[in-house]
Picture 1 (cartoon, rainbow, N blue to C red):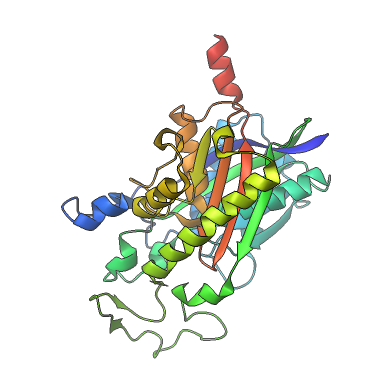
Picture 2 (picture 1 turned 180 degrees about the vertical axis):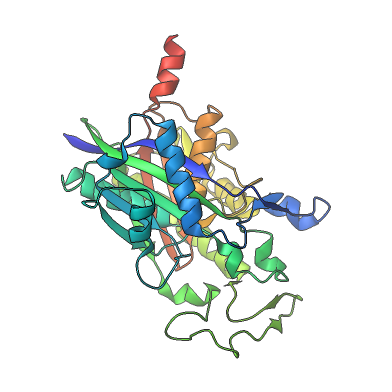
Length: 341
């Protein structure tokens, strides 16, 4: 049977880093010590191009001419229109017969992207999909707002999704969830048609904790986001286990959205997931939004924490509120070759 498969993942983060003070108690709590930050003239699309070209360079058998669909997940588009995916198609010199579209999602975006790619691949509409995630939240953050500045890093990922003949699923099944009533808890209020950027929207105000921001900046209610995650993530995982007919013990690795150490560890303990099976990769990346799961996957593969045919659980959750979970099996052919030598 025709099944979608992840054949390669790469990522790119900027060379410039901002450090969180190691002496600050909050740094140890969130587990983020430095964050990659895009340059003044470096945008999410630039990071996306670098991540995609890295994927093509490393995988010499993948030809740009073979890509027949580009899915770009971002909340940092170049323009309101045209869609940034069209710009990336041209910049990457992909075929003019390549479909290209944006997906506006944040921390759940990578799992959503895999589900879309799976549907197009397994229906036979596409054969080779380039799924790119990229965000530069740093450009939305007021430098004097420590409630978010210490958390978010910039980064991009590129994933090649293709197909194989297989008797079992390699991507999926999926569980999704949405609760738009939480929109006010992670939001940039100005900049869209409902509230265009204006002189008034740029007025900065100090909150009760001494953080400075305007309506043009990113705002997050950390307590509300934490409570949302602790409620919805376990329920989503329970739903995925029922749908899969599986148990937590059957998984080799759990790769959650890398929000921060405190939140992720709280989820791990509540779910009783063993530490050795749980991915924590935000120390030198921060929360890279839609790219946090693929970056963690890459790092775990390179550190041999994920090997060929491991059964993985991916869980994304955040802005929206939006959440998604799925199973993933990555056939790591290079690892198999190394073991056979």
